[in-house]
Image 1 (cartoon, rainbow, N blue to C red):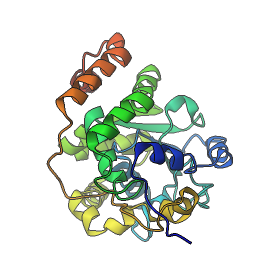
Image 2: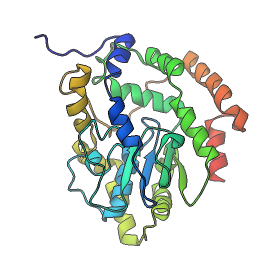
Image 3: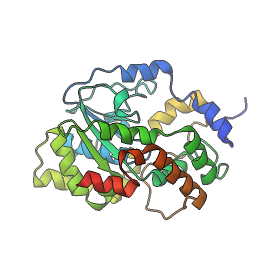
Image 4: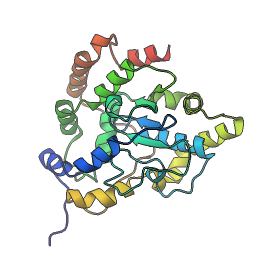
Length: 288
């Protein structure tokens, strides 16, 4: 038997990707009946999901780090069934991550929506999938970005839904860049939404354990080994691959100018009609 190979073309990535999730698994997750206290971390891919999972778990647990991987204790809602992980949790309130926009999710819980500059999230996603979903250097950043612009506008569905469903008692809209600039402020907002009393000791613990330095020191706890062990065989991928979610800060690569222009045009189609000329304007509006 030939060993499993990673795709080298976008066409093959799409063909394999159809087996990443099952219809039964997606239905099982999305039909979950939410409790009023449940917390859903709602993000497009590569917008700070793992970072906020760590913050939420630290707040509710007082800094528990006994888990082998963060997805074990803060499950991926729509993938848990296919990953053979239970949705029930020992710590309260229960918390889940999801890449589905608000209208598709179980209703009645609390929702932390996190957005990131669309171009930066594209670059991060390409880096993340390289060496896992496709062979490194086989698909260029420009190829990948153009493909996502053509076939996937999930980012904009998240933003539009978050802006349409503003309820401060239930929905908290954050920006990845704001977490970088004021992590303590973001932690306070998350704690308030969760209904957790935040004293100086707990704040210091959560800030320490959600720092890049700490998460890099414990990088294995924030990788995607659990999803790889169950879904790689279904996609015909090698058993192991690059799965690092927390990486040292890196410069570049830059999106080509032509791709940046395409993203600007997409923004005009999707977001300008809502009154936001660009991503910076959206962030500024939500902060005020």
